[in-house]
Image 1 (cartoon, helix red, strand yellow):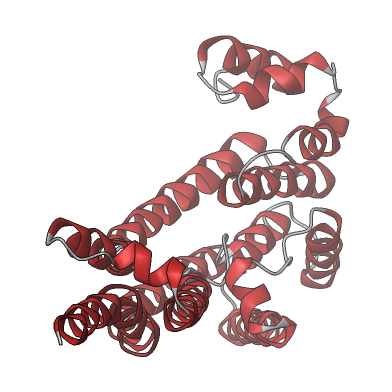
Image 2: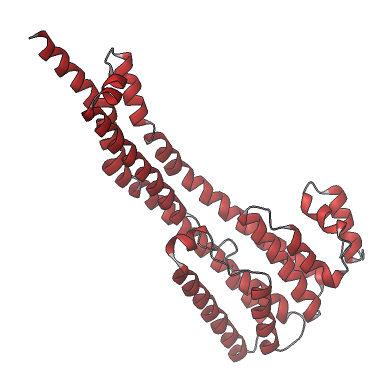
Length: 303
C-alpha cells in the first residue's frame, strides 16, 4: 500500500481493518502521527508473547530508523518482512526439533503415579503403605522430592535448548536500513545503537537468563564484531554496505537456527539424566517399594 502511494497512517488503518491481528487496531486507537508511530507501537505490544513482541519491536525500530535516516519506507518494510518470514521458518524448524524431547520429558514424569496405580490394580495396598507407615512416609517424601527436582531440571534443560535470541540478525538488518538513507556509516551506527537501546532489542531471552547475562554480552560483542567486519569489507572493496549487511543478517539467522537445532538434538540425550537420577528412583520408591513391603508384611503375617 505504501508503494501504491497510500500515506503511512492510511496504510495502517487499512491493516487494522483487514488484518486479523489486534496490534494494528490498538495502535490506530492512539491516533499516532507517522513520526510517533514507533513509540506508540512499543506501548501496545508489551502483553504479547516474547517472540511476537520482539518482532513488533523490530518493526518499530525499522520504522523509526527509516523515518530518521530518510530511507524509503516501502522497501524497508518489504526487506524486514522477508527477514521475519525467514526467522519464522527457522523458529518452526526449532519447534519441530524440540517437540519430541519435550513430549518425552512430560511422559516419563507420569511413571511414578502409574507405578502407584499399577500396584492398586494388582491388589497391593500401596496407598496404605505410603500413608500408614514410617517407611511409607519416607518413600513418599523422597519420591515427591525427586519428582520436583526432575520437573525443575527438565524445565531448565528445555529452556537452555531454546534460541538465545528472538531476533537474530536484527542489528545487521537495522544498520542496512540506516545506511540506505544516504547518511554516513558513522551516523548509521550511532542511530543503530540508539535504536537498540530505545526499543529493547538486546534484552536477555529466556535461555539467556537461564545461562546468565554473560552469554547475552558475548552475543552482542559477536554481532558488533560482525558488523565491524562487514563495514570494513565495504570500505576496502568500495561497494555499498546495505546488501552486504542484509546477506550477513541472513547468515546470522541461519547460524542461529542451526545452533538451536543442535541444542534440540542434544536435549534428547540430556533428558536421560533427570530420568535416570530422579524419575526412575521415584518410580521405585512410590511404586515398587510399597508393593514389596505389602508382600513381605503379608508373608510375615502368615507365620
